[in-house]
Picture 1 (spheres, rainbow over the protein chains, first blue to last red):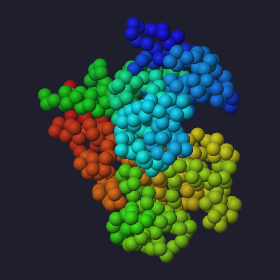
Picture 2 (cartoon, chains in turn green, blue):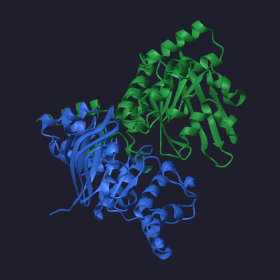
Picture 3 (cartoon, rainbow over the protein chains, first blue to last red):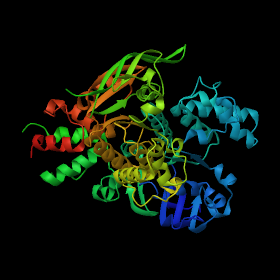
Picture 4 (cartoon, chains in turn cyan, purple):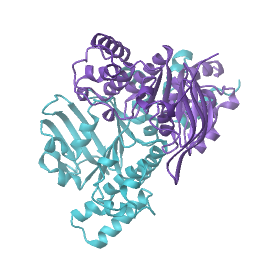
Amino acid sequence: MGNETKKAGEENVVVVENYSYSYPTKKNVIQNISFTVKKGEVLGIIGPNGAGKSTLCKTLNGLVPHFYGGFFGGNVTVAGMEVLKHTTAELSTKVGLVFQDPESQISGMMMTVWEEVGFGLSMLGFPREEVDERVNDAIKKVGLEGLEKRSPFELSGGQQQRLAIATVLAIKPEIMVLDEPTAQLDPIGKYEVFKVIEDLTLEGLTTIVVEHEIEELAHFADNIILLHEGKILSYGKAKKVLTEVEKLKAIGEDPPSVTELTYLLDKELDLSLVNYPITLDEAIKIYKELMVSS
Amino acid sequence: MKEKIIETKNLWFSYSPEVTALRNINLEIYKGELIALIGQNGGGKTTLAKHFNGLLKPTKGDVYVKGQNTKDVPANRLALTVGYVFQNPAHQIFTSKVYDEVAYGARNEGLNEEEVKERVEYALEEVGLIGYEDWHPYDLDYGKMKLLTVASIISMKPEVYVLDEPTTGQDHKGRRVLADLVIKLNKEGNTVIVITHDMKFVARTAKRTILLANGEVIKDGATNEVLHDLETLKKAMIKPPQVVQLAYSLKSYGVPTNILTIDDAFNSFKKLINR
């Protein structure tokens, strides 16, 4: 599966086909969804709480269904491995999962940031030199140089979340999955984490990120899935999904403010805009043209 | 003359001799205000708010609630005037039934069960949780759990509500429901103080905004004035809402500097667009 390609040179790292899932205590959490993620692609997943976003993340490293049980239908393949046929331990070498709350990710057993990042590698039995190199590299990528000897619990929220990302990067996963990585952070923390995610995606790391901060997501997501009650309501280029204002509003989701504003103005003034902005910079450009003195 | 409900005078606070959390805070808060307290973590927002209901007492200086010095009043008495909704619902919820959770504060006041029932119904009605009385709090979704923690404060009928980070972890709908609730509580005459990082929430709700940094008030004024002071916000590493940034960038095109919400921008832009 992993070697199949849709287009020449564009390898699918994630293939989800007709996937449905029910927890033992909660039915139809995911209902017949299909999508693919190509190597180097950034996929954003948005939608209200209870849409199935976290369940989807946990599927990608096999926590669903191997840890939770329940009913699993369809086919999910990640980095060439069918989720049903591989253990979470196997999948975790290819899929790095970052949770919302960094404290739930930090092992708590390690005294320093450096040891925390190396913890997973040591468990996997990597030789010392390899561990050294990977840990130093991961710490650099998330900008925690100089804090190697600190206790993970002395760090700010944003630093802790970057530490969680570093522990995942050290494994050199083929895909990184982040489940609302900034939800618990203050503005500085959010900024730091988004910066790191953006840098990593620019380096070509395949990334899936669940986020409520749609205005941030608009800057770096290639494709977006709008999930609602376990179903895909909309899927495609970020521009396409984020400019479907009525569809988003109907389920209580806010598009980027500049997109919603433009939608309202277009409806009122019949501007015949073909290209709604989804970022601030795009909006500034469009309005400077629209407001040019006659 | 409006009634001064909370006042801090030369308030200093230190958790330990080395760390000064609040530096000379002088604030007057009047009955019926809806205030946002903003600033980075570690800026002193929560520390300040905990002085309003006497959970913390000043190291130096004084805090007055309805004219009474908080040093002279026990915190459980102040809690009847100033209700505090904590950030994490799990830190607040401790019973196994929604009804009991909301009834707790009213029962503590020594009301009889008839009066308690009235208060619980009133509070659940306010937050839209009628019908959930027998639910276990942890069976509620996260948004409703948050509303429950607000209801458990409403049932005590305080005059001042302090909400600490009400929108953290909420989806867009949850944020809007909380914004509407905050506005409603304020319209009913309550004083509401919201600690938040959510600038869209501030723009939607607050009339006055106080910006704290390093334990000091660095800006205090009308929300549109504070959120358009991009220089000062930048010092505190705060980004105003996207429409404020857009309006700011289009200042030279005649866009006014009091825009806070999408509606504000819509009303002003439609006059400025040349078709």
